Length: 207
Image 1 (cartoon, rainbow, N blue to C red):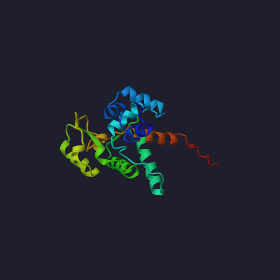
Image 2: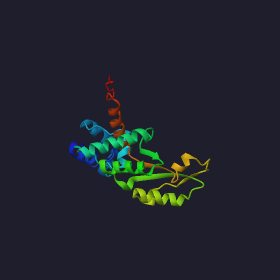
Image 3: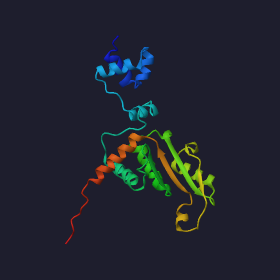
């Protein structure tokens, strides 16, 4: 018995069900579902796409603005610059940036919230402090400064203190890493950075 293209489009493309879930709903074999998907020319999702849908059942946890005002363009440049310079580009499925400067992290968080309208409850934070610091006070400082919940923090990593110097003065609140676990947004940011890399920054030499 044929499974109509309309039903498969509704269940597979619109509702985002897997072929296995569709088989269970229609009380048939998964092989039959896959056969009619192919027959109707409905392209199957890749494993990566399937995993992404499973992790984001309600759709993307962010939005991309189609038109940019001057303020939006400036904010985009600021955020991309911060991620390009300070972000962890090797993380395959997360937007990740770490720094000891509270205002730098706050600026990047503002960029994510206002340029991409991220779902803030998906944010996570990792804090590293030294043994001679009050880690509870550091956690409270970062949560208050960024306007986030302490429940969004991973367990704080405490590192044995070294010599006190300039670097330690700059890290009196520890080093904070911001995580937004979403491969699509991470790839989007890297794509925008690749565009910046292709710009000819050569300036004419003044006589």
